[in-house]
Image (cartoon, rainbow, N blue to C red; front, side):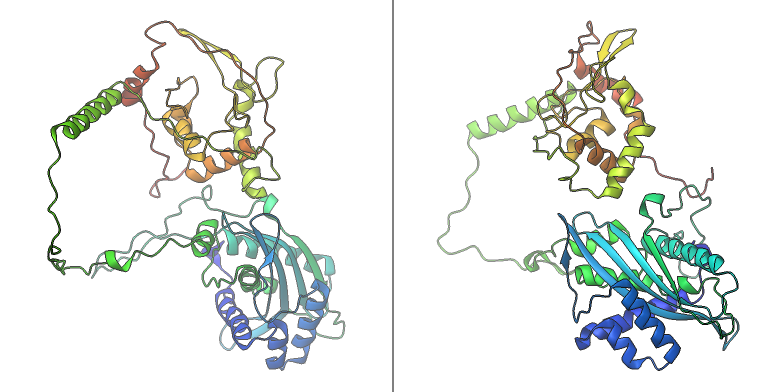
Length: 460
């Protein structure tokens, strides 16, 4: 984790990212540019061999290679020798990376598909042990580059002497690479039986973050200078919000300049009694509807209904599958002998039988016409897309604590499943329980829709 980092990794990230940036500015291939200024013969041999083994694609500018859907692909190179210990230190093994990445331009997710590592540690007494060490280095570095981050509490007020403290107090919430995110790793050792053995402990970690960042640049044309390259960071860079218009900008403390009334223009007239009466009536109607628990309909959307056409990445869909399994959605939303998640199971309550709904992306009988906003409202507030209140037999009181990332993953997974047309029995409880708007009062008394937020001062 970044709580205990490899000492040379940050400086090598800056150095190798800058070399790649200089190559792009010069209009030269990144590998050829490095070799021109790399006078260490042994290192140059490693760079050439690694690039050849990886099938390096020569380029003089970002390729912006299109993949499927919103995916763009890139390839990045970085090289370093781990020099450590007290100044001036001594060199351990040489290492070079070629990283192949996929970037989803819509979601910002980065997936490292393949890493080819060239390694020169001199004479190897236990080659299998060295290879295992390199594999561990690749996973550790990829996790740091894409996910891991140490957060600090706000620094003290001006003049204070207390240093900001680390927020993370336990490992449960620390983000790390999952098994599904592990790249294909190809290891290549330079045969040096006549050379002294060198330290192979963490040498192959050092160039990794720069190689991934350079691959993202090749895919997107955007240079990222600070890890981790999380979906939020990448999405914000690739899809920036529009800058506010210059006409709306106003410097702080500067009053707006009054504009003269245009010559010959008519002054606005007051509203007549009819528009005012309509406005008052609409306001009164809205107040009554709010007090009665009425909620507006959210407009339907058109769903692809298939995983292949889903805008979400494979990692997001897998996360959604895990969440659906953890929540046991299929248990309640499957009738005895029925199709999984097609609804229709009767849940016996003291107030009557509540029938579960169809969770498949069928537009007519399921959630196929639901936008994410409609799904989020149902999960957090217990309000269906059509504005009807849901009964807490559907445990939205618990689902409300999920964060937006998890809700997005679950929504994407459900919408990528096969659509099943299945009418389910209508829930019809006796009065007053059948009056769904009365659930607004129950929610006001007993439901908190605020998502869960970890308290950094507490531990598990």
